[in-house]
Amino acid sequence: MTSYQLMVTPGLSGLFNMQYDLKLFYDFEKGIIPSTLRIYSWRPKCISLGYAQKVDQLIETERAKELGWEVVKRPTGGGIVFHNEAEVTYSLVTAIDNPILPEGLVASYKKISEAVARGLKLLGIDAQITNYKHQITNNTKIPKSKFRNPLCFALTNNYEISVDGKKIVGSAQKRGRRAMLQQGSIFVRRTPPEAFSVLKQQYNNIDAVSVEEVLGREVSFEELSEALLKGFKEELGVEFKT
View 1 (cartoon, one colour):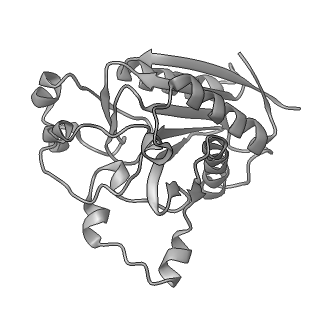
View 2 (cartoon, rainbow, N blue to C red):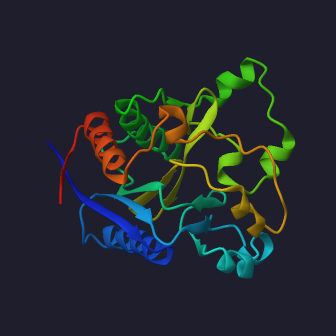
């Protein structure tokens, strides 16, 4: 059975987390490390933006500092994520031509999402992979305002993970010459409304549900990371070594 490297690193700063994921990506590009799954959390709480978003256009950085939020950019795309200290993030660095994953960005993204969804199901969460084409054929209309919303959890995109139509995980993928990096944020606990005052413009339609809302109880980093690991093992058929 194929073995991947596992890194479980809770309670690190946003700057460290993003720099380290990028280091893993480049190390894999150079052939220095094997495929690596990292599961981590954030301390202090952190606001991350997708690589194409501009901090100065979207975030009142002084207000964020007053409220104790670090602000960083991710190497992957997507929208703004508020990573409170309960939130859990995964990153997977592996080969673009990994035989375990189907070929192509979309297909590999979907397969990795299925591994995450399987982990959530082990906790008792009915996590589903969104089929956007299916939604369209069933006349589900998404307001144009949601597409303009810069917040990650304002819209569930194709092959993202949802519960009863509400987003619970947001992911994005970066590709290089031979390596891919997929990062995903698991919405564990709601962020206090005050945090959104750091946005330069206020946005509605945060169409998401948290892990703790679904389960009706608190969930620890250890419990969630263990379930995620099992989900990856079962879905991808790989072993993990620390």
